[in-house]
Amino acid sequence: MKKVDTLFLAWLVSLVLVVSGCAGENKASEEAEREETEAMEMKEEERASPMKSSEAKINGKGIFIQYGAPSVKGRTIWGNLEAYGEVWRTGANEATYVSFEQDVMVEGKSVPAGKYSLFTIPAEKGPWTVILNKDWDLEHGHFQYNEKNDVIRVQVQPEWKEDIQEQLKITVTEPGIVVRWEKLNLPIKVE
Image (cartoon, rainbow, N blue to C red; front, top):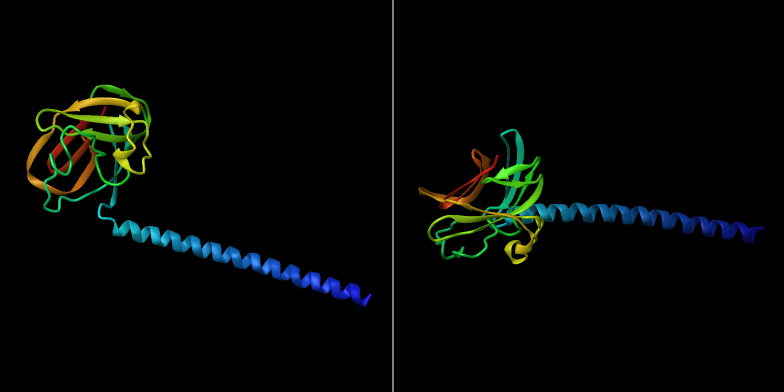
């Protein structure tokens, strides 16, 4: 009987150790997760091009846009940093994306409700090409861009301002979405 009690006691002690070890692992796991979240928040604060967003209703339709916001920093933007005739992710880092709560018309073309990446092709003269692409969650922006997944391509006339917008700003406002960076003002009509 003493042998059975000793075995039972040994089993009970090992069970307690296993259970307490699991609880310790849970605490360690929770702590590691908290530290990872804090590290991601710090990394976001350290980004050269911080994440920004804008949302509003245009003609009663909800629009949300998220983008990485680079700054001019004394650089020549158009025709240099962002080449004419080449796809630009219209922001920095991950692809800029726009979300429409309802079906909309973008520059007269029908776009179903959903999320889309936003790309542009700058032009030295004349209108710019604005692209909505169904691959909205691209980690590396234009490096993963695939033209086959374009939903629409429209032509938009840029406006050039005297004052400089240092950090890229994309806003949801009349007439729809306005891209403003350096001296560029690109109004994209959304109905």
